[in-house]
Length: 174
Image 1: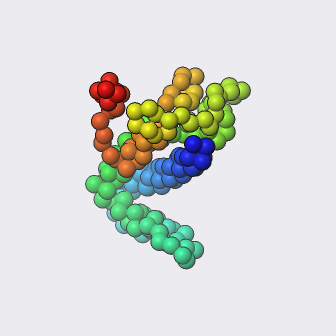
Image 2: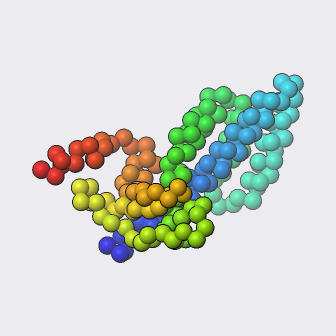
Image 3: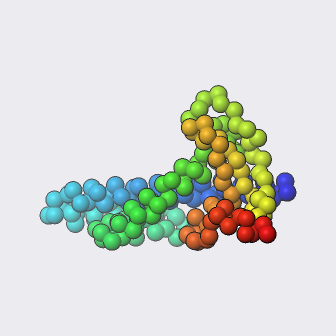
């Protein structure tokens, strides 16, 4: 159980970092798209060319992997592409904050935005009786007790829609 708890915490930290990095990139793209839209039509091509050249200049230092940064920047004029980024950014907003608050409890043993407030049993995972997945209880930024289980976080990330087990708990326990 302790080993599974440790691996689960590392997985949650990786999920947090992935979402944080993706959201940072998405925000950059949305800001560039906004700047592009506000640029006079006669200067939009030059704006896109310069922005793309800057991105390719940053990518020249990548030798052992792929980078899609310049490709994504080349699509900031595509309103459907920009709308899809905005939609997913908005969809991840609440979950990202939730995972961020749990991460603060687990990694730093602190309650987010509450100096001096001590967390209750930081890092201690429990196993759900119905699903068998690990879950953490943690104190959020408002001082309330919250719960997040690993399966819920994974399903959110993978965009898997599952029934709410809490609604069917009595039937599942019979």
